[in-house]
Length: 360
Image (cartoon, rainbow, N blue to C red):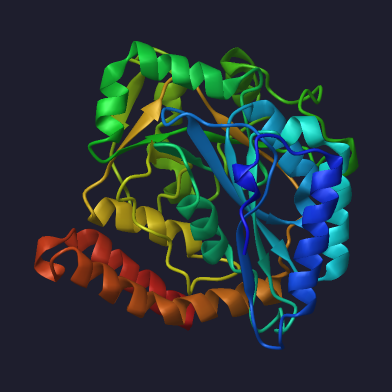
């Protein structure tokens, strides 16, 4: 509807005016419709093509975590925000006005839907991921979820320096290689109201992570499901005896957080919503599309633990709903990349078996 990113600088008065315009557009939305506003709020900073943009998606309940993620990254961010009520928009406005200077490198894209049953139509993870990814203005992106944080102290600048010093990483990204930032779990649950970018128990560098990992304070993320992140080879990363990156093999179920080139990147499958399959389907498609994976030696992310957003009933129902979408997803992927005979048969078999298991 409008693009505030064209403005050179945005202050409090401009934000309030933008919010008035957004509220007016929402008020005129007829029942049963969704309103998507790309670049609805941008706060003034320019980006360079060589920058790396974090992509994320969240609802207003996660604003405090979002702020910590932005402050620790200190680079461009493309954020898709899920809005359900006008009161969500008012909370978002207060947050913007309070944290204006920390958000100068963020572009917000709004997805408003107050018309549907949210139990029948769960949180649209992949629609929002696509909204954030489609609107990245740089050549490179870093896929994140909102509960994950990077190394503090200008992580973006550090990775950019690495790209300048090691041209092979840029060449690989532009030739269908995704770079994994290994994910760890900060097991202690911290109330959002107490979170900060320099919270005392968060790891500050790789040395901290190594010590906390060995003490089992910060284990592998989702270690109970080794397929999810085990391919990152944590033992090798901890040993620190590699080049700036090291190659790894894809294994079915792998769902890392990755940095890569935006050009020609596959989109997320929109129909996966809520709990389960939504991100692993995208990484599976990357593999079938011919992408390779390497792990960055000196960088990491960690998950700040929290109370689950889903109860067991929601998980079962949403997994089953997503399982019904799985056949259509894989049929599209197979047709897109040349037919069953040309693709990884082991992955196709595991996908089919996994889907059948979820549908029972």
